[in-house]
Every structure is written in C-alpha cells, then in structure tokens.
Length: 102
Image (cartoon, rainbow, N blue to C red; front, side, top):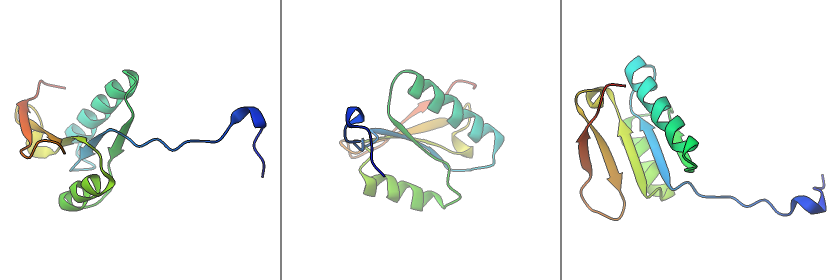
C-alpha cells in the first residue's frame, strides 16, 4: 500500500496528559472523565483517556511507563465534592483539589 506523496510521513505524537477513569461503569466517574476529556481535546490538548477494565495500580503504572507527564485521576472517591488527583511526573507528590459538581 502506498501513500500519496503530498501526505508525507505520518508522525506518532506522544500524549502529554491523561484522564484516568478508575471505576469504569460508574455513571459519575464516566461522566466526569468524558466531560474533562472533551474539554481538554476541545482546547487543543493531546489527551489519552484510559477507561480500560484494569486495576487502578495497573493503569497508573502504565501511565508512568508510557511517560505521560500530566495525569488526572478520577475515581468513585474523587467524585464531587471529594478531591480529584492531579499527578505530574516532575513533582514527587501528587496534588488534590476540590471538584465542582459535574
């Protein structure tokens, strides 16, 4: 299969941020993740949305292994008004903030 000369080579671009859904199937978690993912992509961000049916530790380890520098982790305990977790690879501790109702 050939590609047209005008299209040029395709480049793979690494995501710089991720939205991690810790409880797939939970309506509040799914809605919060999809809303945030939509807002970030609409703003032009390259975002990875992880909604796999895996344990939280597997998902978080994979994000670190892939090298995603910014991660927003949303789970059932992070639903409003509880905090959501924002993790960055450059700072050792993760930060939490109070979320607003979705």
